Amino acid sequence: MNLFETIEKNTLPDQYKTMETTELEQKVLQVKREMGEKLFLPGHHYQKDEVIQFADARGDSLKLAQLSASQHEAEAIVFCGVHFMAETADILTREDQHVYLPDMRAGCSMADMANIQQTEKSWDRLMELFDDTILPLTYVNSTAAIKAFVGKNGGATVTSSNAADMLKWAFSQKERILFLPDQHLGRNTAYDLGIPLNQMAVWDPIVEELLYDGPLEAVKVILWKGHCSVHENFRVANVEQVRTDHPNMKIIVHPECSREVVELSDLSGSTNAIIQAIENAPPGSEWAIGTEMNLVNRIIQEHPEQHIISLNPRMCPCLTMNRIDLPHLAWSLESLAEGRPQNVIRVESSVASDARKALDRMLVRA
Image (cartoon, rainbow, N blue to C red):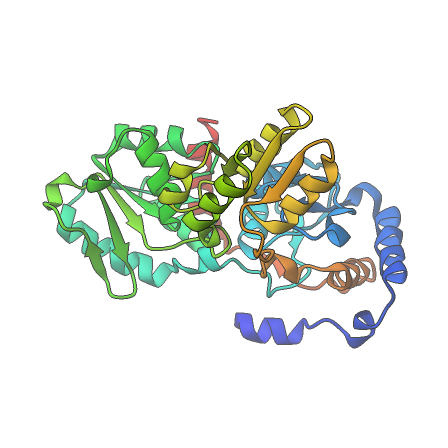
């Protein structure tokens, strides 16, 4: 059964679409009470408030996958995030634990910008151009198949928190790095390590072409042409507008934003770094935050003592992350409690084994 057939088969029943919010909330709470420690419900920072209120833990994708693996009593992990996150949880958890995604449509456009067929074909071409001088790294925001490819070829995963350390490690292994799938995180991290932009090339998997004007021997980093559809919508014009309207306001952005936006901002950092920066800031401080809108709104609500805005006031939340809503969560949990679980996430053992290599090479250095 392919993904589209799975989605059609596991469609939200109509009755959940018409239930009142209070009824849905009661269903979620009832299953959580009944299952107790046998159920673990991790919630990504970008989730809606209607979902995150029930999370047993909040965090980024890797942290939540690791926490899932540490829940020794948990038999079911209902992952409130997107598909690649649930895959990572399945890779790290035990065989007798099962991971579920409340809505199979909850994907990630960035992860989808690097599929395994493209990557294998591109790797062959890059080997022709650069011989055996490249080590692949992939952002954890990638599919299990891409993690497995990287693991099989001696590379590792990275997070937005440890990308700099992992790039340093990678350069101790090989002369060049292929960075998948987010070009902006790769570019920003490499630039901060002192690699000039004129030593970075971009690989376009659609046209199967290396986008670079200089001599090939000068290339140190090959950036996959992928991006986060949320963070790429923070623009230089947004920074300039904040500087005009709020001259005392600090701007902090995620490194998935473009190089131009990061360079003009005061600070950049992972989701956790952004949260901590606001938590540690004094009352009365002013911030414009360049990251996903659900999280920004939550930070605003939790820190009324500060003046906080979104860097781009016209931003929408992450649309695929928002596929996980209260009706889907209630349906997923009720189905699980009734012995007819929906949307199990299971990574094939051979893929999981190679993907685990990529994750372990990172985790041993964490």
